Length: 202
Image (tube, rainbow, N blue to C red; front, side):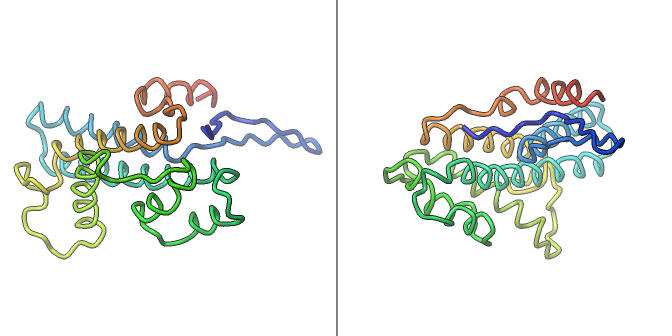
């Protein structure tokens, strides 16, 4: 499909050497989400500072959702030629349309068949659950108990895990619909990150 490169380029120009790292934002945000979840789990296991646990879970949930939204734009961009309406892909990417609106409009154009959310109800249920928490954070209105570890719709390890799993399932679902390969960072984020470090000489 359209999986982005993530290597470093060395460019020589009139005696100057410029090093550029080409990034894959959906991948890097997902990897960060996994990283912060693991940090939260380690702290919880040590019965450490609950403020930090909440902080890491918040970062993980937000980054998971941001990764999915960014991936949708990247996914659409990778299928410009299949969409069939000139300029539509770029207009959709630049628009304020939600993830669901983009899914409903663009995915049928890519797959050339109608899709229904009933085909994968669980992933959409998890998407709405995580989206609700994301919106509670992004549009915070003084909710009491948002960091309660037992809050079903709160910022906690259980929901951070659910967010990451939802992203995995949704991205797999998108690629299944388009008959394309799932990006490697979804199932092997740590190995992918090590590859980035190696290629960047970090």
